[in-house]
Image 1 (cartoon, one colour):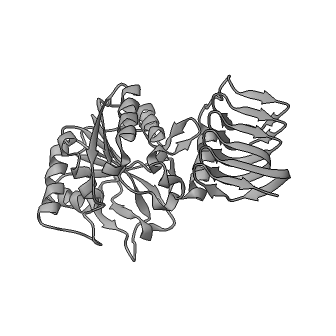
Image 2: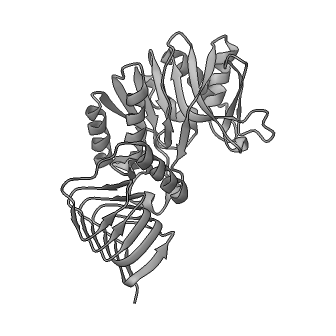
Image 3: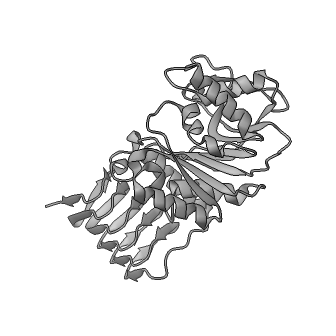
Length: 338
């Protein structure tokens, strides 16, 4: 089976972090967002994955491409890179990987983190994973019968008759059928709300007699902005066996788990946790940190930090544990509290 991961978006709601790193490569504990997605799929799928195709924006650059190819190899799969230069919708993004749309295909959008058992029934033409939500107006939704067979799709309905939202993970038994319907949308310029929508292609497949089914997930985690990313970080730390590095240097400090502490981190006279991830080569002194993501090479001294994301190579210095909350700062930032 081929796994296709569209990830060309700009991630504007996660700025300023995404000004220096594509959102799917943003680190949460010991993995990037896109690796968490791949990890969960490999952990739960009952079908071997031979290829991972990443659809990225050309501006991401060679370093990102190399990192993604290495990520695929880490999971014993062949990595391929495709480009989506313009944000023309979900259907257009997937069609950018047309060469990988063959045989069994699993499509997973890169900002979709989830908990589920992937028992894929290859006898079905397609499976769409869903989750019940309180605000279906913001999502593509499905309407199903009692056997979970999908009766029709609707994209961000103003008056929804279902609250079963599509989370962004799809299985298709024959990728060629999907490719044909995606191409039909492009060739005939069939847009909805200004974009080529995957839901329209799937509706066409259903109208031609293909049977598509809904399958629910246990948890659906969002990494769209700072607050939702911190919440997802908390859930991932709670539900996964994440081990801190034995090479961290912890001196006269208290660690309240769950936490993740990377290689060559120094923590001195501080209290860390719960729900904290600290990137490699960071130095935390005389500070209290709770519910935060600190990227690599961060320095804190005399800071009390809560509910914050701190970019790499940033420094925060205060006096007598100066309290800071709800910060979101990018790489190479400096804060000095006098």
